Image (cartoon, one colour):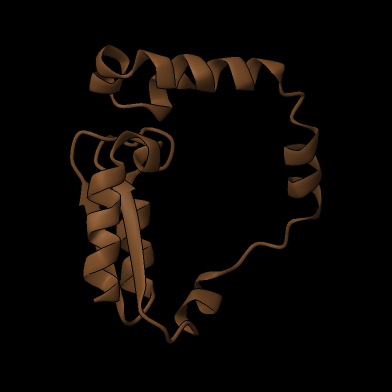
Length: 110
């Protein structure tokens, strides 16, 4: 999962972040996650079309867990939404590029 979740440059530049994520993951039995998915009710594209507030879809350019096209499709489905593709990041874009994510959020808010 680490190889898919983090951008290759993260491996070289942020070893402590990856080690922390790995250590936590290795100690996690995933009971909460399994319970969540057992009772989850998934939204449909029809549900997404009902969203009327401004939305920002943030996606890592090199996300190998959820393809970028899925984020683009979501942005196309939700009216009043914007799609932000963050370069040199992957599935963990909020951890890898917090400044860029914050900048995109500020553009939406202001």
